[in-house]
Image 1 (tube, helix red, strand yellow):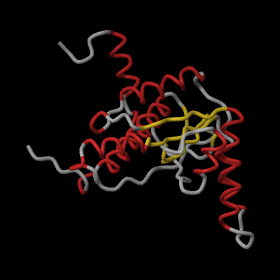
Image 2 (cartoon, helix red, strand yellow; image 1 turned 180 degrees about the vertical axis):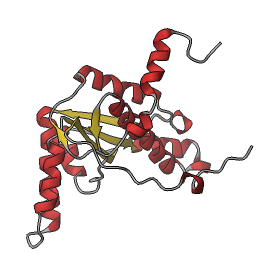
Image 3 (cartoon, one colour; image 1 turned 90 degrees about the vertical axis):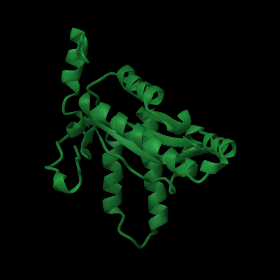
Image 4 (spheres, rainbow, N blue to C red; image 1 turned 60 degrees about the horizontal axis):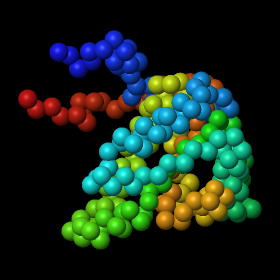
Length: 211
């Protein structure tokens, strides 16, 4: 008896072939989506429910921003970066980058609930130093799962890291708990143009197989 027995299971597997290869950093986004908002929400829901976490902590928090919420995020990021860089530095390149993210269809925000992490540290002090690290691992798996699922469905995306710069503005603007640590931002949308060829280092230098 094979792993994929039902006809629909085999079709879904066929659909997932090459999924990791499809996942690329796409910066030229258009404000459209090849799938419905309901399908986007389903992808996020599946990731939140089924991506594993250390000690089953389920500490990752995900926020989907669409429409004006999405645009507002990149406006506040632009303003925060402009203030950080100061009036004497050329801001044109950074502003162009912010506009490219804003031109997408939406953004996924990734957080870690520090309250959950601290609770685990108290319950299992022997692993106290490890829990924040494992928490980041969990978040990264959510990012990768969602990014890959988007790619399979024809959505382009990239992963950005403006945490440490926009945290307070994000908490205030979107009414989010400050116990949620901002980890990353993922702007997404219809692919405006495909990214160029990806340089891949020799696999033999990075993969060891012993039989």
